[in-house]
Image (cartoon, rainbow, N blue to C red; front, side, top):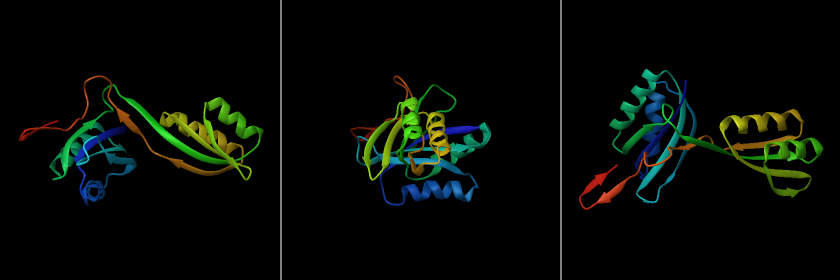
Length: 169
């Protein structure tokens, strides 16, 4: 089963390597990975997609929490979440490409040298469908996908706050 895991971690050199190394050492695959600082520049949020049984992912989460740089972990797959992925693609311009762009609701952000650069934001499934459709035209030249990013709706989520000498997550 596919799982989206969000991790709050210290924004320090080597933190990402330690997370990726933990996956590698235990034979877990990372399907996609996004990481960037949060509103607190000392903390980064890493969102990754992996596959495995619920028991395997529970083990992953326990192992992640043992890493020194990890503050908190949330497996969003079991609960309600909002998921999106960003796609940039280049395709040689023609009517079939324009039809794909229009059907998907994608946006042409650059058009030069007979190449359309496309931006699309949607679920991983919608991004995959657009890539397949563009590929079927025979005009697809380049694909760049962000991988899944996800957030829980409402109050539930991951947030790191400094309050005096204590830390709240």
